[in-house]
Length: 247
Ligand code: GTP
Ligand code: MG
Figure 1 (cartoon, rainbow, N blue to C red):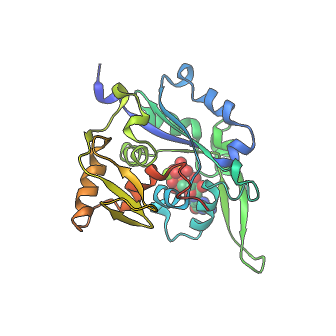
Figure 2: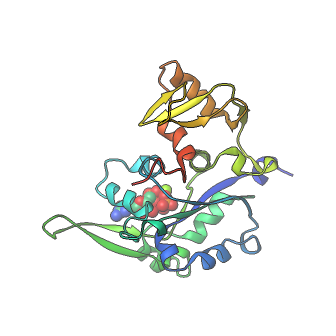
């Protein structure tokens, strides 16, 4: 067995438009082990807060469609008046060629291109929505394409670590190094703290299992040193479904 191939992982997000259109079962069927040879390694229902959304789509910061992309993944566009329905389904799939197999079934990013180039793919069922300025002038379009799938192995690692704690994934299925944390880390309003106060949320307590890269990042942040990953990219998953990253 080639361990690296066998343990390849990818992150899938079933986005709010797919949930609103009751396409979850259909999407899961297309991605099933019978069709793809891939196994579930993780699954959760997530209320997507702004911090998580910004971290997930960090590469698109500054683009014209970025604000609407955040509102889209946060569920605010499809459920403006029903916050309790805002959620995505986050999944980790594992197995040989996981990244490419799932990207192929998703199809091209733009639903119109998807319909043209790859009829039958998931995103062929998506839609384009016009983006307008305050005067009603069309300034671009939003792509409601139902599903996200990691584009490369590097993206998959970053994204899986952003959405999932190691303990959300069965021990023998984890693809990235973990470590037992030895310190107390708390978070409040964008800052890291080492002591508890009522408004601070505990990110990690001594004895908790965490991604090694997260512990490395927290140690550097604790010393006031710069890290490649921002505090947000570590903290966001610990705030998932806690009411702390809610609006
Ligand atoms: P994801 O799996 O969602 O990451 O899609 P992708 O990898 O096929 O595309 P990419 O990461 O480049 O873009 C992320 C999301 O931003 C897409 O799913 C689209 O919703 C949106 N997006 C990307 N490019 C454009 C664009 O040129 N215009 C608009 N309006 N939206 C875009
Ligand atoms: Mg992408």
